[in-house]
Length: 295
Length: 336
Image (cartoon, rainbow over all chains, first blue to last red; front, side, top):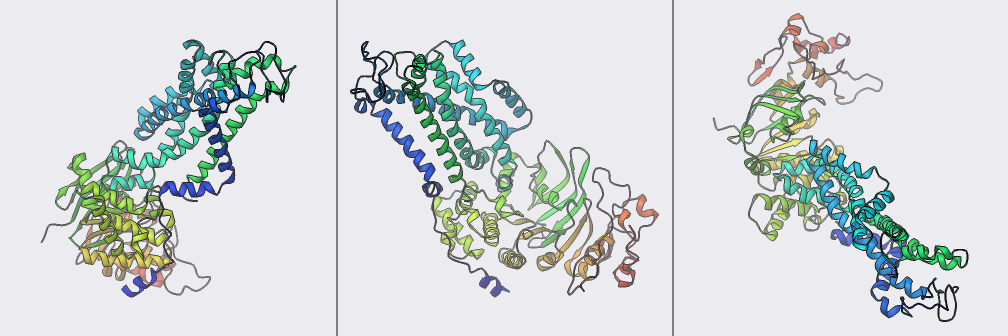
């Protein structure tokens, strides 16, 4: 009998050992769309960092004579805006504020929302009900309306726009975090951990966070594009960045009057917003499948 | 007699105030003894097992009676003592290792974590212990398997890893909750043999929950048959299989496809279905399905009646029950 047991366990060679993130990277590398999206985002970030070296002209220098030049004008490769400022330089510098406004609220909301959601999901019971119903009050507002209302109430300005966007995203992330945590909490491996003597804190730190942060992270990545669009919207309404700062949403706003004169020019900031948000969304999709260990 | 490894007295577990999942279970295990708990789904075997680790949420369940494991009163333990007790004195093997192992950590990491939770060991020491355990449960190329994720292993290999995890802190008692149900038939045998070898080598006491009589006979010294939250018959594996006395045990034995079953012939099934645990009948809970039931059966719950050395059955008709075993009575057993 012992011989049978000994003999029959011989299997093929064990798979090569790899770490978790090595595996994620290996799977992500096989996904050309996610790689392309990642490269676009990398290029945008580099563009934002090295804006002063890349921009051909000063993004603040106005020219009354050369206003609203079309794309391809000599000296203005992407034309000039309604105050005669170089579009290309403004688009390059605009990446700084736009990316910052897109990423920061999501990062803040990721921290706060995950903490709230995991707490609600793991503790359960009336704590869960109290937290989640409060969250639902915020969730009931359409995000654009909530962002506009909060920004309006706090007063126009860059910092207040960041705060209001963070408040908009916290309930969304908390709901996802709560849903995943509730699922994970009832898994066998959590009970197995308890049966091997793990306390509540260890279970949350090791088993809940280990399984929950991935999905929340992926969801949050997809919110970056939403955050950028909302930030642009706030700027467009005059609640976010103020002129003459270059920011894609604000530029879209100021150029809207020129849409019949120079439609291509007026669309350029929108094109940048579109490229950036779609890149973040595609990267989030790629990460979602790459972070699934079972693939 | 030495102190028993496990002593359960009059265990009652109630869920949501009405569902009596376990209704007065008594069970004693000597050190190094293997007992199989057998019964259909909902008979309370897994609930009994989880009670021994106090895994039921205190908010929604009520556990009464006394449980002593290795001299410790389980129900009186503080949270702190409970955390030390779980895993170190008593460990559990789950039915589906793919679900009971955390998918985002390698099996090696999980074993190291458990060892370091209970003992002061460095990561390297814990890993050396994990490797030793993998060799003990006969996992091929154990060094590399330690770094594998649960989903990268086959079902049998995962269950071996799960057993290694359970043995990590040298427990005295092992609780196995249908450890072979999720596996292929050939792998089942290997796991059963492994469990028995380990039990002999380490002197473990094991409670083995299963609904597979064959598996129970393979590893257990004694078998306890559960029905509707009670142990209805208990005896040595040999006595119970050769001379079952409770009509339910007899029904279980007869409902197995033994040897070559002629094509087209019907398998004997026990008529009816188990009782609703929230509304148990006043008498024997098996009476509505029992071909031998008489009026006194429906009036009072039968006490355990000794039918042989170390063999008891909660049935007042054990004098006539062996007749159910003869093929002639098969047709009589049919009406529901």
